[in-house]
Length: 413
Image (tube, rainbow, N blue to C red; front, side, top):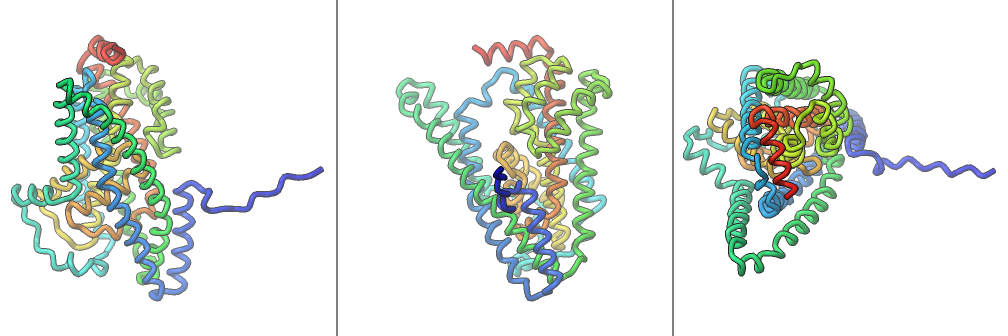
């Protein structure tokens, strides 16, 4: 009797987070063994992050333009979705700013030695609104967002006219196809992140030993603390005070989608389980679809909070003091980046690189954060799932079940 041949272990077949863990272990062993002589490996991290930033701009442009052209924002009841999601995003930003400024987690990680010469020579950030606006408008990411919105609105106006409608009809298909290509290319580049982690960890541990571990632990701890406070203060307010749903009932229904989202690290892939939980909570189908389907790119408070904490953490670690106006500017950029790439795999890495670039902060430390991103990313996904659930119950409470049902009927028509 013949036995099936054993498959050889192939690290390339592992899930991305496992590949990152393998790269982390190999890089750590190499850095601790060989010391500073492995420092040149850090260039791997720099090149890969620069490639991600290069592809992220067209990806963001196409993602936003596709959303406008596909009329994703024309659903009845979307005003309530925007208002509630904006409230949640504001809460996430405020919590991130408070946690980052009160506890200053970046003080446990000293990266001043790694600050590029250009950044060391950077003058103090001007706190005036005009300077912050100029800083944002000078960012390729912000320009891509504005251009996508302008093109989308122009096409929408042209479609009001019969001749313009015929002329612009193929555009939606071209943009959707371009978005798929951009996502495929970004997916290939993101698969290189284990190499970036390997190079960054080997360089850091080779030069500084294990002194970085305490700083990374502080980063994880305060990210998780911020997300926990957001769930406790913001989502529970919608559930208990606005929707009047007992917390025990809410968490009984939410337990499965939250655990599922944490396990597979994707709120989008959790959608069927989320919709079932909303059905168990007696949320109207219209509100459920508005929140979990149409609002998939807006209910990403986990990513948003993480980005603000991560940006301020790195600024503190680099010894760069950001004024409150600069921090709010970073938060605005984070919101735009999160909306643009929220539904894309590894959106946290992509949008964080965009935010750092918009503020002219070095992005070379991102691979260092990726060494502990396995935990943070799953917490982000769990919070995003809870965002979909809480926004749905809030839409029902704010607009009433009849209005939410009418929204569903309007979609079907």
